Image (cartoon, rainbow, N blue to C red):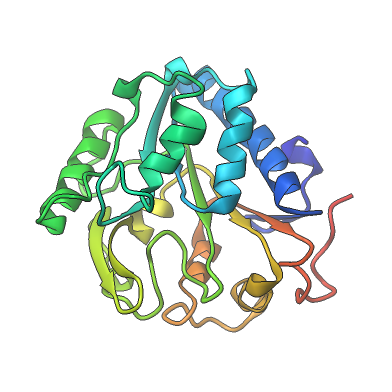
Length: 257
């Protein structure tokens, strides 16, 4: 699958696929394409990884494919729960077990959020500093990643940017602690950082997310309730969705061949 095969609406590409495995396959191809373009243009590839079941399938696929030169990659995490790196809920642990260790990614190129620290705000600020150190940043602007991988919840959240949570109002910081009722304490990328990325890719799987996906892509603006609507402002955003998640999209949304 190449980028030219995608149906495009303004800055958004929508690609409907059969199931979660097909999403993982398409995402692996897209990630490899972006990595080659980035390393060819800038000598390295920077990506923010996501947590969740569909990314897990993607990472397992990437681990056995020789499609990405991981020696020229810098890997970050878009969000993390307030747990240690060995905790079952850790996004870092999931990525390490499914991708980083199997693909023998150099640990010095893996930039983990230290979300186990008692002071989560200090941990978030330290991660901002790490992003700036590795990627550089113009004064007053967040760093620019080549690719940010995201998922979307059935409530319309993305990363750990939950409906009506404090992090949605952030306009300057790149990474913040976010404590949302029902979700617990997290550290997350903010929209100022996400929307600076050269490419954003959102993976959405399952009928439980169909109603939210339709509202996010087609509904009237309500980003406090549906934070993922803010991705409409991304410079280049691709939505990889399965047929179940896409089942409530309107007829105007084109289906990829």
